[in-house]
Image (cartoon, rainbow, N blue to C red; front, side):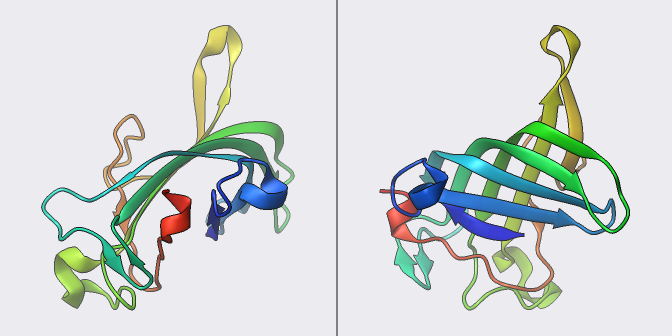
Length: 153
């Protein structure tokens, strides 16, 4: 997973961002081209801000539209997919596993298509309890999410 959410304060992907999530377990690549920041803020019960880089916020939420393509033999393909994501930057220089406790970075990602009658058909979801109708970001066992202030201005 990775990319930029609203890095230049423009939603146009040529200057405003793109997000990619590769789901190896399902052999799918989700690519968000039309990225819109929903909100930035601080995780309740966790110290405000982030240290690397220094920002007054420690989470960002975004939505957008893009596509899903199968990889590694998966022939699935959707040209129009909706997305919602949340990244929580809780530790510097990143998560080093369970010893970090509540300071482990967290990530939520939901992709869906609109079906008959406007019904939302979930394609992929990363959520702590598996229910994408609530946003419960999963802990990241290793790596580093970074939140830059320019994405939240």
